[in-house]
Length: 404
Ligand SMILES: [Fe+2]
Ligand SMILES: [Fe+2]
Image (tube, rainbow, N blue to C red; front, top):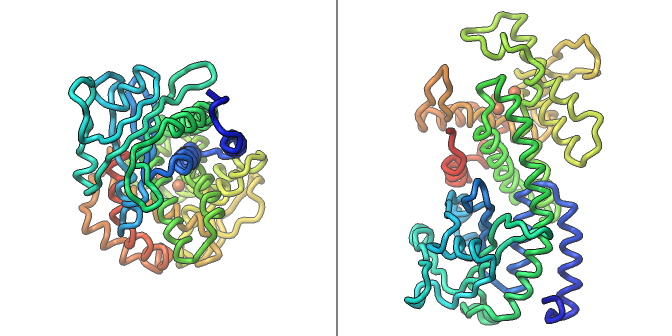
């Protein structure tokens, strides 16, 4: 297969696969893989499905046409599952493990077993025409998912069929990227397992909760960064680390006694102080390790209960490694690191909108009223504005990661 690819393409693919190994978060990696595959084939849109318990689950969506529309981002948080069988295009490619080119998804010839599901097109007013679907196979020939590239565009921007060469390039690239995807998926799974340990002990920290907090945080950051004209390369780098670091905000709770975590009713003063220690314990977990996102994770764990008006905790603490630790006066305003301000807002919003064993969730208007009221008190006022400006994206994230 490689021999029919032109040399420039091969060099570009090798360069990208080398870069891919530097990316840690599965979503940033999928973003990059899909974008590169689309560039090679000049495609308007695409999605990546990953295999989970023998079912293909849509993990990543890109769509240039929709993203240009106001709040197009909300369409990127789909929650679609497809069985591995010949009824759908993605399922068929997973089953046969062979690339498939379709010139018009709405004009399938009657002899093929699969059909095209138009529900996404209908909800987003999009027209899928040409499709190139390739299996994602690791070096050991394990199927980890399917990549689908949608609507190849000609120089004038009109949709045209994919060519045989696109198939070669994208399939070759998909096979090289699959190994990195598998690795990043493992990192995410290890993190979710760590969170699972905390969750066994603290019923508030569920996998769905941390997934939502991670996703809200990167979306709030991205809008904030767009408002501040932060360079795209910087935004990508931050998104890569921020999601994981945000997911781990409460991991320090693994070291808090069960009797406290599971206590019903209010905590007394000493108990409350003990509970507050989770921010210090969390920050300590990341203190001595060397991976790139550790500083960010430590910063978020330490500061996610600080409040904009200075009424939060732990405040200015000197040495977080000592046994003796006392909360200082709360940090205020921009003294609280940006990423911790973002996670604080995401975490509180999610806690209010989720049902817990001991409480019902608040109705939506009450939550929004609260968020507005706390603008400049508990939360950074600018971030509250950003939050409201992307509220439809926030809702889409909520629908994607639901509590079980
Ligand atoms: Fe916390
Ligand atoms: Fe939380």
